Length: 209
Image 1 (cartoon, rainbow, N blue to C red):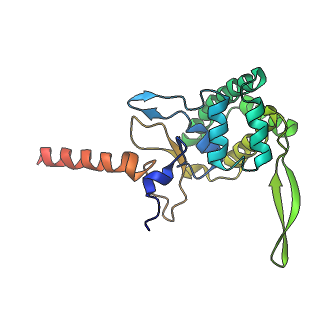
Image 2: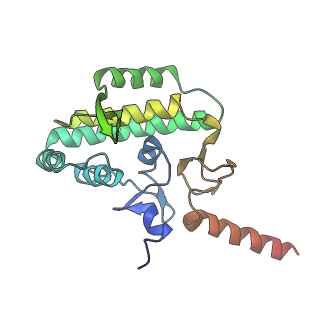
Image 3: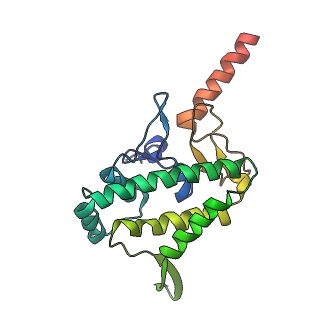
């Protein structure tokens, strides 16, 4: 039996996962589709799908909690705040890609989120060894800030800035962390943009000849 195609793996439950880093996958929830920006986190139900697709929410109890509050006013307010933060994060990433540091205001916001919504850690067994595992306790919508803030801090503080890039396609707004050995990744995906750009470049060379 054939496994899923690369294109199928790139889209999970209607969301792109090409960033190689959670904060970048979060930013990529507003891609260009059909030539227009499309908001994928339209409401709390869509957010619940993204949380499941990203692997942040997997336990049955957590899914039940989300189903219980996803149609509530607090959940909708949380989504609006999360989307607004995503756009400030996008601005910080663009600065990072241009060789500048994120603004002091944004760093202060991230630090405040980290203080208000810290990750927890516990010890788990892995064979004969012990290891630390981080987790967050989901009880209300605001608790979802914990993994988002932690992923943002990891992106800004631990990821090599020169390997954080936007897809070379002019009409694409997808960002990714280049984990390739040579660090030469140019496109969000060969399926989505790479092949199209290669064909266009070939046609330009052929016309010039």
